[in-house]
Structure formats: C-alpha cells, structure tokens
Image 1 (cartoon, rainbow, N blue to C red):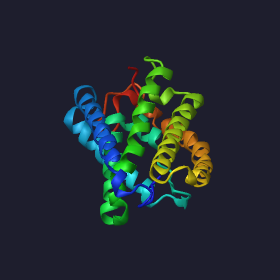
Image 2 (image 1 turned 45 degrees about the vertical axis):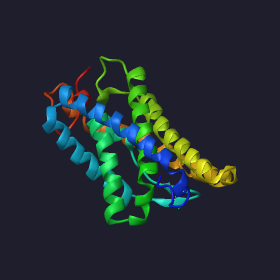
Image 3 (image 1 turned 45 degrees about the horizontal axis):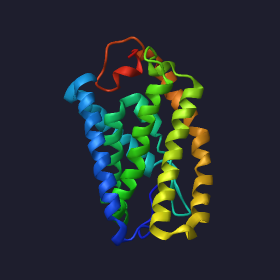
Length: 224
C-alpha cells in the first residue's frame, strides 16, 4: 500500500503530519493499555518486536507489486492484531514501515506520514469493530470465518479508502482510474487474508485457556 512519492506534493503534506500525529497518539494509548492489562512493559516490547519483524517480512519477502497509485502487499493487519494485540500491532506496522524506508526504500521516506496513516487508522478501526462483533466471552482462537472475514475485509477496505483519499487529495479526480485499478487488485488480498487469519488462529488453539505469555496477546486464548 505504499503510495508513490510525488502523489502528494510537499505543499499538501502538512495534512499527513497531522493525521500521523493523531494516529501515533492513539497508538500510544493502545500501548499503554497493553502495559496495564496485557503483559506489562515486557509483553509490549516482546510483541512489538515480533510485530515489527512480521511486518518487515510482509513488506519485503511476501509478493508485492505496484498497481496504479500504490503497491499491493499482504499486510495481514487483522492477523497481527488478533495474535499480538492492537498496541504491539500498531508499533510493528509503524516500525516495520520505517525500517523498510530507512534501509531498503529510502525514496519512500518522504511519504512516511502518508503511509503510516494509511496503515494505522484502519487498524484502529478494526480494533473497535472486533469489540462489536466478537462477544466478550470469546477467545480470539474461537472466532468464526465470518468474523475473520469481516475484520480482514474492513482492514483492507480502510487501506483502499485511505489510498484513494491521498491520491485524490494530491492529484485530483483525474487519478480515479488508477485508484480503481489498485482497489481491484486488492481483492486478491481480501480473498486470501481471512483464510490466513483462521489458519494462524487454528495453529494457536493449543494456547486456549493457558496462562498469558509475553509472546501473544492474552485475549488470544482467554475470554475477555
């Protein structure tokens, strides 16, 4: 979902600074919640490192290709949220994107605030959605395909919506066809990611009911 440099010019980048700062503030709130309720500082650090490594693999190792105004990636945002929690997932997405920009794609760094907004805001949205569609007494390993599909689809739809916003904001409505091409290509991710979610959760069934571990969010195997 990396929006290409130049899609939003320097004059208009100030909006992305504000949205990224707001996203960082929300991310810090979720990180603080993790410290208080889900493994303390050690748990937050361990799961954030795991999330960062996972995001880096998603960006650099898994297949990715440029389509229209951006790139299509298998980001698996709902997977890392369900396995690691919202706070570590947010930190992992932000740091994974930053590491990629610093060491592998320095031309993307000027667009960091645009891209990190595009990743984090949909993550926070599906965190809120999860509270609505997953009953409080349900461990994440027990969610249904329908629930996994809703979370995955909502995350990918959020990414496409933000990419469309930034492209139109930066270039005007003349880029609609490129945005449409990008959105159509993301349908592949929408089809695949729910199955990945369920496969990972099925593999994690052995953690159900066990004591919390710093490597995974407490909610994975325990009812809230």
